[in-house]
Image 1: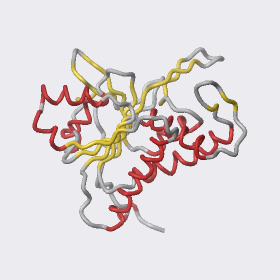
Image 2: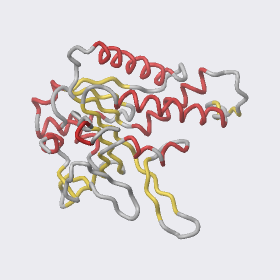
Image 3: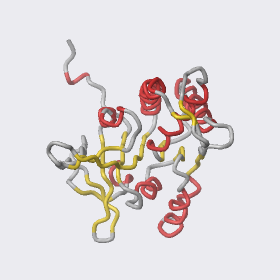
Length: 243
């Protein structure tokens, strides 16, 4: 039996940002500490570049990125991402100096779509529906998607650096209570489990023209802060790191 005194403290912050578009999720990535690597699935990094040119142009040189878009070779984006993550995992396992202080996934919503396409087009033996545009995922695809995504999330969170995932928001109305429930937009059942993996979960908002983040839960959305932050904080990770 161990005493709480022996419990190791987390050296890095692991964040999940969930909100509608245009609330500052991507722009806030540019305030993260040190050298930043962005895995870009939303293909909206131009907003970050324009934001930094106005606010902190020197930071641009500290940010590198890889973009993942579907091409004529279906599933290619998912394959490229898994290869790139495996390379980072290998670097981390060697125990030397890690090349980044912060790794960002923008966003886990579109990353999930890319991994689903990867699963569909690399498992041709399953019987699926077919439209003119694409194959229709089968139940087995979604079951496999849940397992693959859980492994990928855990592998990214285990990297020896700060981690930020962004996610788009989805609203469901409870048929019995009429209550609107907000959760990360995600194909499959993993959306309800996603908060389990993060100590910090914020909802970016714009308050009086300033990018802020809600850090404490409401009746409609689960937020969490293990840092003991106030209900609303500026979307500036360099300030949050001091906590």
